[in-house]
Image (tube, rainbow, N blue to C red):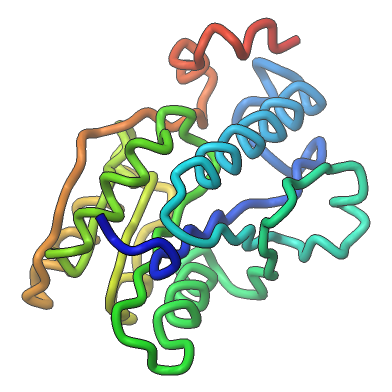
Length: 212
């Protein structure tokens, strides 16, 4: 297992404001219901990230947590925070990864980039991905929809984040192709289910019901 402190889990998310998050679920849940689900998924993600016990947990937020959009949200003690900044998803992820891997030129740093859409991304699975980075340059948990729910890295390369068709079924396959083109050793976990579309609600744990 990686030593505690050399793995940083970076959770990238938007403030759970009605009408601005989980918009593809609004036809099924309404704007308020979709935002409520986003809040619950965020809470679950942070709980599991902190329970993993593999290093620091950082909420990389859009907008920054100092913004009024976050005023009603209760965040756990010990959570570090940062702002995603401008740009598309790739630019924001690249900024997060590069900044955490390059800080002070410290050797052995590892980062797990995750979102908040996958309730199956448990503390156990986070530890599994972190452990894989002991002897791989990258770790990926693909999503059932063709994206990925986790990208773990112990080195940075801009090709992993640029000119990708984000939010399409091609993202994971193209990312894996680019990782292998770099000659990096890649660990790939089992496919997990994101909650993005109304049909995905069937995959929510029973504890999330009722949603309306």
